[in-house]
Length: 118
Image 1 (cartoon, rainbow, N blue to C red):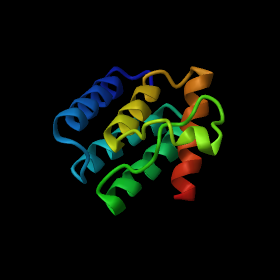
Image 2 (image 1 turned 180 degrees about the horizontal axis):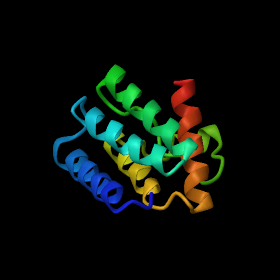
Image 3 (image 1 turned 120 degrees about the vertical axis):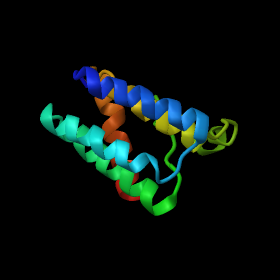
């Protein structure tokens, strides 16, 4: 996101997730962040933020894994450590700092799909 206040809010949310973890108190800030995305006309980001805060409201956690760079076979997947909700949410938020990067937008869209399928 390009707005300085949006970037500042992203960093604040990340700090809160690191220090306090994930709970419903993040929802208000995520809704504010969504308003910035609406102003910047970033539909994938707008959708992602809505899905993220709805997911947190429902589950009081973030239960979505970080998207993989490449497909992993099922047997190999068991060797990889699972990420925590805080790590995944922080990664998602870091993607928002540069939504013009095609790799970031691809991961945001993958989060959208995972959240929709959850």
